[in-house]
Length: 169
Image (cartoon, rainbow, N blue to C red; front, top):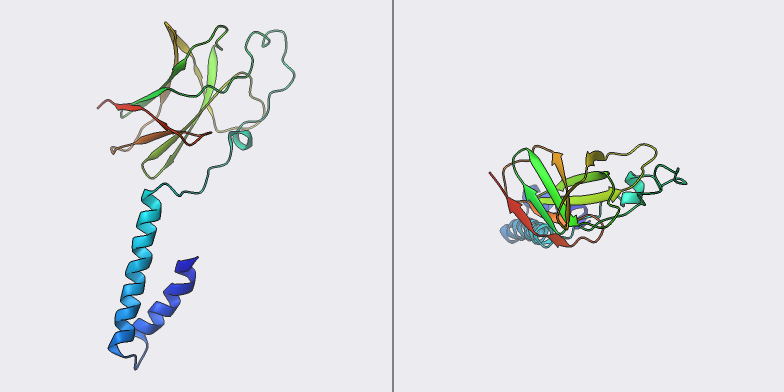
């Protein structure tokens, strides 16, 4: 909001005919302060929240007998492994783990927001449905996704908590 209010004033002071030097320097200082505040806000994680998973994925209908063995679960990832072409998401396995999971990945800046949903989905959604693999006490999914080469910070899409991330070439 500050940009919308202060930028026109600064531009008028900077380029206005007959403005004294102190007004022009004040305008430059104002624009620099706005830019500095924007950078600080961006680096401290004050980002608008993406839509909740409920807005992306529809609620589960009454389960059919075939689905009753796999209730809806929203696992919280313990670790994310990244490569140039894949995102692997790991969480503690439970008895009766679903065969598939819906995964939504949201990129914003250097943050990779991760949502995992096990169980039936209905309606339109932007999720990738991938098989769930079990290795001992760990469940994981592997999502084919090309990522830009920079330092990603994986974040749980529901809680906003950082997820430990391992990057592989």
